Image (cartoon, rainbow, N blue to C red):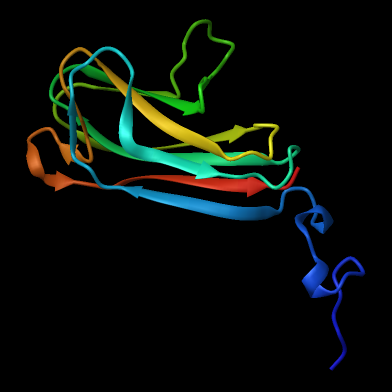
Length: 165
C-alpha cells in the first residue's frame, strides 16, 4: 500500500499550519448542570461556567457557543455577559454601552433554552479562559431550573472550537 501524504508531508509531520483556513483544530466542551437562583442586578461570575483553550496560532479564531436553560418568576430580564480573561466580549459594539452577550426577557415562569454563538479573535497562543456572567433586572432569574421548582430543568453548556485562520 502506498504512503499517503498531506501537503507533501508524512502523517507524523502534519501540523495545523498545513491545514486550510476554516479547519476545526480542537474542540473543548463544558456541561453545566448546577441549579441557580439569582436576584442581583450586578454581573457575577457563574461559578463553574468557564472553559479554557490554548490556540495553536495567534491568527486562529475561537468559536464560542453558549447554550443556557433559564426561567424567570416574573417580568424579568436575565442578562448574560461573556468574558475572555478580563476582556468583556460585547453582543454588538455598535449599540452603545450595551455590554451584554445576550439578554433573555420573559414574563411569567416559562422555561427557555437559548443558544448564542460568538466568533472571537483572541490573537494569542497563550491559554485563555472564557467565563459566563449573569445579572437579573427585576424579579428572580433561574438557570437550569424552572421557576416553579427544581422538578423541571435542563443543562447548559459551552463549546470552544479553534478555527484555523
